[in-house]
Length: 161
Length: 345
Image (cartoon, chains in turn brown, yellow):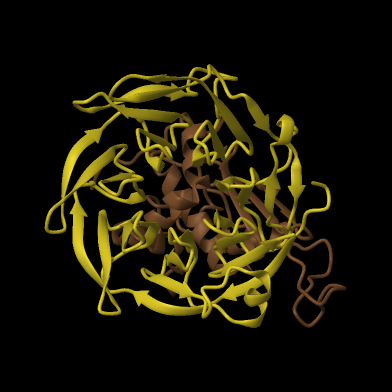
């Protein structure tokens, strides 16, 4: 096994989900007949994604948080920022790709998804952001069986106790 | 210019994944489209019709599907100038050449050499050369040899990141490439080899685009170049001089972009095409809420956004192309899996 990039990450507890307003489920749709999507719902989709190198989730490592998610439901925009545990994390692109794939698979196609590093969180911030925003590179990456297997490993559900 | 509009005249359905590119045959009787579903579809109109009335009364239909050739996404397609052959560029690192024989499209050659994804291919105006480019940061030039053989005559390094697009100057003496390194490069032949004669952008703010250049196109006379980018702008580059020697004509582009069109787009502009009427169509990213196939007009350099079609597609518009004969007809394609035809009024 190769040396870990961050051998001792800080691990946080999984927070219990608290909704400040009643959840709008399909049986209680918005005025125009479709479900409204908020930051907490996006967070629920991505909090349990596995870290590529540690046996923890992205929430437990504080890579993603509800505060770093912004949703404009009317215009169909979702913006997610993530914070790698170390600024030279070579897994940043893989984490970003996993976030994008999870949201692509979970959200209706009307949503446009932007995935970015939180400002100042990475030594190659601009390069990683540019790569994650390039739809052609993302499409090509997801046709690469090795890379897709790594993404799917991050997205795999936790082993049953 | 203020009362222009674009009317949807046809929906071409069939692709099973996002449609990356569309290309009209030189005579405009056929439209080819390629997709993440690894196929090319060729669309035809019963009357070969380019008149609006015919567009509405008769349906375009899919007359051929080219499949079982590429193992990955087909990113781009190009017709040979005589309309008898088609080149397809794929993420599987190859370019295939297809010809129509006995009513069936057959793969007659394969261009192998790129290390990985090929992103664009373009036939030069006399049909003798094919340019290709890709993620390996190189531009390749291939020569058509007797017996349907294609020989690589030059591999051009110069771009520092993947190359998204190649297009030939209408005169054929100049090739333009652009891509992820935010620059546009002009390549010309000095009688011995192809060399980079000019790089547009890459010298700091104001010199060019500040993010990926997704598409470039020449105006019909070949005097100006337009480019579109992830930086949400369209730039028009004017040619400063055309030096004609006995063997070659060299086009030099002025020091910076002559015109920068900004403020019209809020998402990446993926494609643009300059029609014979002087209007530039642009296709951009956008969610289900708004995608435009806008047009810019250049009469007396009064640039503006003349038409905006919100919701033109239910996803990013990846490519827009004007019909080669009927300047009012436009084809667009999108992540929503559709090819659509529009009529400019």
